[in-house]
Length: 151
Picture 1 (cartoon, one colour):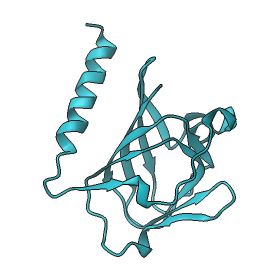
Picture 2 (cartoon, one colour; picture 1 turned 180 degrees about the vertical axis):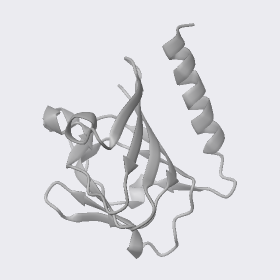
Picture 3 (cartoon, helix red, strand yellow; picture 1 turned 90 degrees about the vertical axis):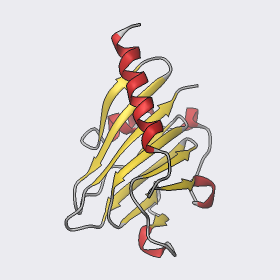
């Protein structure tokens, strides 16, 4: 087994282990107003690691998956970017945040959710059209691992 395959296996095992809801929360993205569309139509320069490289670090990439470490510092606004593949997010930490589409329309404002989000949280997402997240917290970073499943 290649070392990259071993790393991928370990990463997926960790995500699977931590995605078991003990005190965590699992969210279905169908309840959120994320735009979809045809990823082939989205500008290549707005790929997450191209457009927002300070926020998206590649931990592993091969022909099957891309594993990203995603971070936003307190009060940081990331550049508009997209995610062309379906993905699983393991969100370790976050305060309040706003996610906006490419035109600036609010997709999600965490302050308007009826129940507070509980972390860690795992969620599945279809490809995400260009969007931008703003971390509203003065003290807490947003930290997550995103496993993008290439088709």
